[in-house]
Length: 257
Image (tube, rainbow, N blue to C red; front, side, top):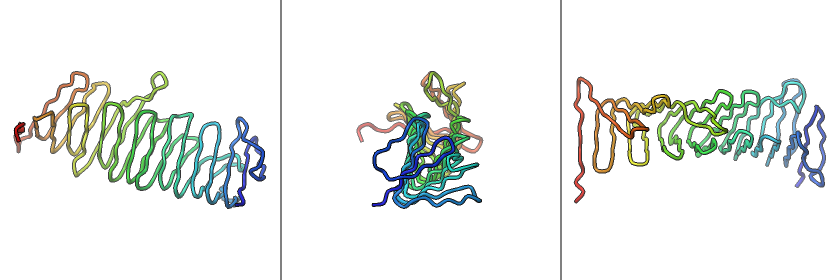
């Protein structure tokens, strides 16, 4: 196997075989089985087959990578991976994997694309068969597509569209705002509740989940359904309302069944 190893630092690019030299602090190391192809005028280069990119802040692996740059090869602005891709951004507490990963270095935005995509943001785990996007600078995230799921210690959420804002407090990222939509009904699970609707909104200033359209809240043997509902996460209380065309329905399961 002809492995090419690249060390990028301070505007210089040195290429040599894999033997004997390791990456230093502040350097970016790239290894690839099938070399590098540079397009100087277009400002990008291609890395082919079993690519590994390592720096102080992240490690990326993929079948193939396109690296865009501004001035020279070391000045990477964004990366586009294709095939069996993974990222571990140690500095930001982000790791994930998917068929494709798009990374904007300056905006600190990461997007994972493909079936069984995964992206973990510290203690929050995100998965989707569509796409997952996190912008670390803006504190924003977005999941799109079938089987999209967001899970942390207190919540387990399923919906075809999930977006929100997180804030960092004492080094830990916490959920500030959340919006979930699914025309086929989203699902939200807490420790003792199951909620479903077509739309849900959460705001940590009120600590309330609002539920809209085809609302159902299940607790134990009790099922309440209507067109609007809310759940107070602090008081652990909930309420369901009807609209002008329907009534609130309460069903109590028979425990002997």
